[in-house]
Length: 96
Image 1 (cartoon, rainbow, N blue to C red):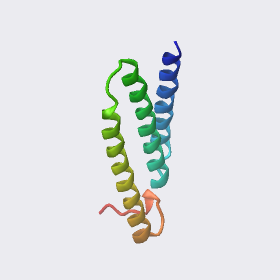
Image 2: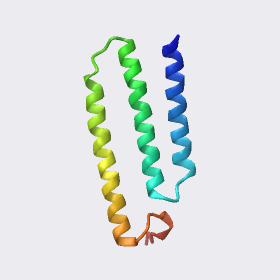
Image 3: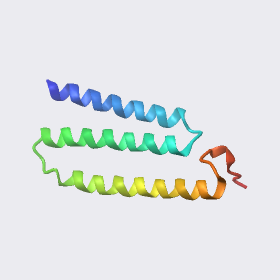
Image 4: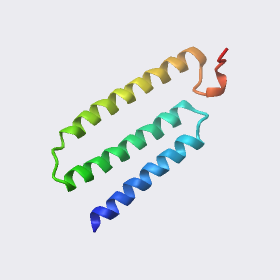
């Protein structure tokens, strides 16, 4: 029964991360933090589910490698955006 509660908590974390991702889209840093929060909640959901069915947890290591690559790519985009534009507002771009 506690596994069901844990899954609900992690699903709630996922929903909250998506709400923050959709509503706070002015700053790139907040968007990246909400994406990392979503990845963290997905990691916990996968960890509970894979341990519940007694499956090998090797897939979690692959998932963590891809999430670290995603985080470092987002951070490098943030740094290059701040160097070129001076801030992380999406409104400062000119998409022409």
